[in-house]
Image (cartoon, rainbow, N blue to C red; front, side, top):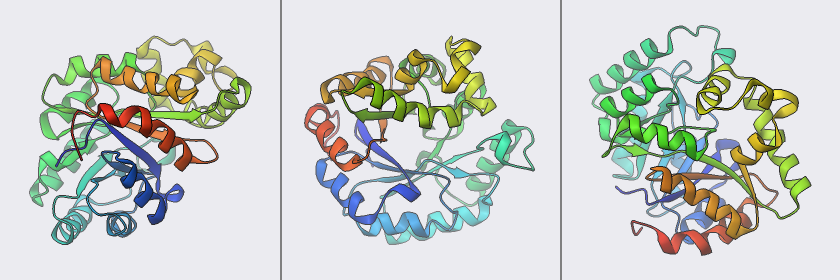
Amino acid sequence: MELGTFGAWRSLRSITPAMAGEIEKMGYGAIWIGGSPPGDLEAVEEIIDATERIPIVTGIVNMWREQASAVARSYHRVESRHPGRFWLGVGVGHRESVEQYRSPMEKISEYLGGLSTAEVPSERVVLAALGPTALRIAADRTAGAHPYLTTPRHTRMARDIIGPGRLLAPEQKITVDENLERARAAGRVIVKRYLRLANYRNNLLREGWEETDFADGGSDELVDSLSLHGSAETVAQGIRSHVAAGADHVCVQAIGDDPVLEYRALAELLLDQRSTSN
């Protein structure tokens, strides 16, 4: 099952079956469902039911909230009903939102072990990974890594760590809007939520950003890097920068008022360059 080069990332609360159908018709390679989908995967299966062939990936199921054994049962149910249509993305989430949070690497190892014991194929599991240790685990024990809130600078570093032959699928926020003030404000509203979380702050510091870039909802340069904006051509060029840096697949999260319109505008520029037909 191939994901193509460009996919659409939507939180569970911001996608409908009808939107999923539209995204599939545009030719995107995959739909990523974020916002910590429940481990029963019933909401995810509704999206699969509404589409014909496009792969659906969770981005991600939270390891602290959903038991590996239960998620594995859900995976096998979905796979039996929709063979070859589903990838399971998992991750540890954020220390600030999980009361029982402990060593994240220990939890990741334990959870992946549980999925393996329950016979979920490692080649159909993707790990949310930012730092070097998590990226190495993703390369060693899963199909690959799904970094969130990163720039092509991180993509280049991640590829160096995981090496060739493993999926690298970073998320990228975008808005197709040439009004600089409005587009930057929309990006800052979303980016500032994540700048309060230690794992993202630490990762951005590793990328080379400074603490001063986190003030007041993020410096203009940081916001513009994490949430691309401008004409469709400008945004498409920014998305392609991840591919040039080593990404196999870019998960495009449209944050504008009409995401379907944004995905359509980008499809006309990006999808004729897909490395894999869908």
